[in-house]
Image (tube, rainbow, N blue to C red; front, side, top):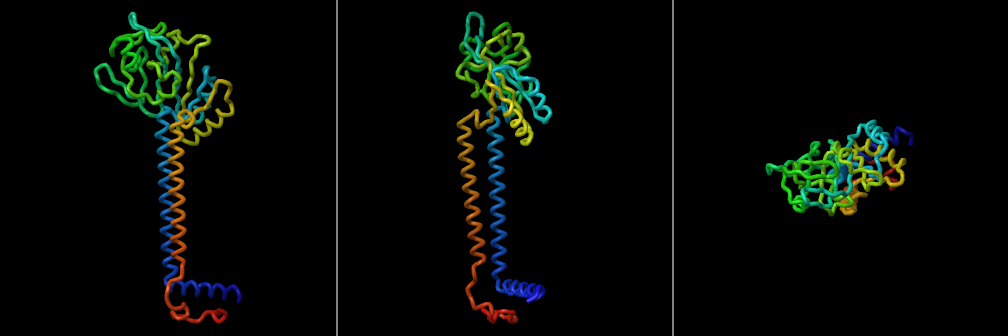
Length: 300
């Protein structure tokens, strides 16, 4: 047969199969399979993205550069070039004083843009609770209930840290990255980074941790991560939520495995549906269903 005859032969076969009803069932099975696979894949992708975004709130950023010394200005310049939002913090242990009382506390000086992800929750002096992304004003501090109790203070009073006299403007109820600090088991105090130099607490040899926090669009964050990863020096590390919080990493891995199993089951069911749709239907032979004899039928 020439090409034209083969084409006509294929067309007549297609029409005969369509009249028999098998192609309709196969087409319906294929549509259902593709729809199911697409829906499950889309759902799994959205759930994984949601989990990643929610977990990033525990880091207060998408990626954090953690160092034992101030980072060069080039790091912030690269992040800004990529269109990322920036914040920073400096954490260190120090003594806090109020009258004759003193207590070891974990101090954290934060920039005005803190936090980039998540929210802080603070009880103000008038008893109201404020939640959102904001930092203490210059000259003010937030402390937790443990420090208030040890120093026998109330909201609206003052305490001393280094050369600073800070007004206690709020009580810390929730802090996105509070669990990441090395000294998070001691009472906490958060103040504005603009007051850090005046405090005189950072000296040569101070055991402080400097964090540069970045957040933004996924591709830009990944580009910064690759750039920073190739420039890490001793005493510096690059953190995301899975590296900083092992328990979150375990939860995310279990969620990904579950979503992967759900996707695989959908693929298996879809394959079974397509296979059943293409199975021959019971009934008389196709040659008895009407229609003209086709070239080559006598060979069967």
